Image (cartoon, rainbow, N blue to C red; front, top):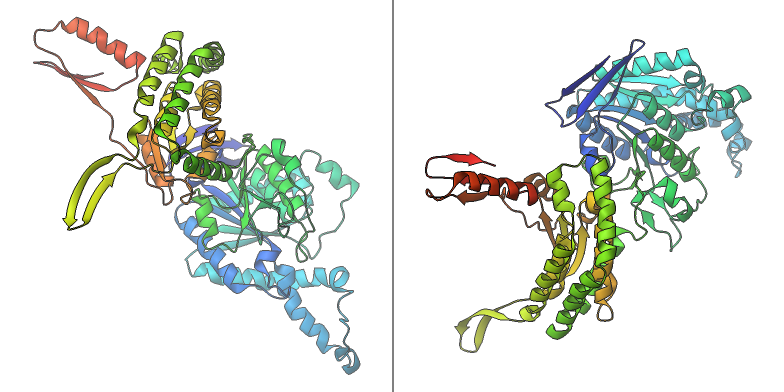
Length: 588
């Protein structure tokens, strides 16, 4: 049985499936950071290195309190939160080490050697977990009570996932707790858990991942309860290309396991945890393959959990969408460097670049139309509306018209450095308004690929670097048009002065780079403009109104002919217009 309804609390769809008496749910499929704000069911995994103190004894109360506050805020917004926590061993060790010291002789107590070191893992770990779990859960309960939120403790072992009946009971229990607005807090039962996997357990886990740590536990839970988002919080900022302490290691804000695995190498795992970054990546990739959105991030970042859920560029976001090789922040830096060189060119040199862009459209028209046909064929298979197909299509005539338009723009290449007006403030003091470049532009436009050459020419004419994001339905057309525009830039400026952005995820990342991008120009629907304005961080957005056109029909005009013209305009250009005659008002 399935039920579909729209929530008034969050803008998502909820699909409820009732399978053998167990309620499971999937609220939203996360394909970009922008989708995270719609996540309803979220799992937060807290690593040992995040929760414990640096000396490995006791809990870092400040970091834990900050995490509880953020989880509580999300819970009170109407989301369903679940915690997978480490720290029981460290919590218990703090007390049991003191107890062990009390049982020592005076000679052993004064010994410079760490008498407890050799037995810490083999003997004390289970005892520490048994003692510490009680205290850790009591601490969580008192903290969540400050926000009027109830919690429930669930200790699990590997067999709870490998046994079908136990797995079914665990799933039903968690779903019931979540639906009762209670935050389940889960941990492995380290007091009885085995450190090795039996042959039967390995066989039982053949369809999933073996549970060796809380990373794998969190991934299995996310899939079991159909979570929308899994946040793996540790003491590192995310996934790096190498060990974070190496100078040449680079943080990956987006990671596609199928394409980017060769970019990374792993270092030693944390001295206090049982997993490590390699385990986190493996578990995150497995959860991603089961349609769970995953982010690995640093839990010590101020309001990190809240900002991740709000779509900010924090940590490493796992995606199945293959990203381009050059990171977006590097693209933005190169566009800014190119814009500075562009500003030093003469008007005649900028004119030469734009005229070359125009000639490239004619000289490579066959290649452009071939790429455009691929876009049209794929769009037709996906059932794109005829009006949108008309916008997407290119032709020899359109390309010639575009080339003429670019040549007209080239003739205006002397626009920079012009004095628009001047005001005399005092003797010897003159205030002038002079045209200057803006810097780097991020232009987001929808399915019309013929917009790309026009935008590129205007950007070069005005001396600005350019980052372009076109509609995904025009992928192949935009790629070849961008290449031709870049070819025209050489040898005057670097070709990276103009760059194409391929995914929504990359746009979300760019909207966080206020120090590199000076203006965002979204061309499209009002929803697009509002979405960009909401995501933009410290970057001005040049928005617009609804874009409704008003057409007035003379009383002596042929109304039938006007209707035919109007239908042709709305189908071929996709404009929304209000039409007025002497006696009738109607919309088209």
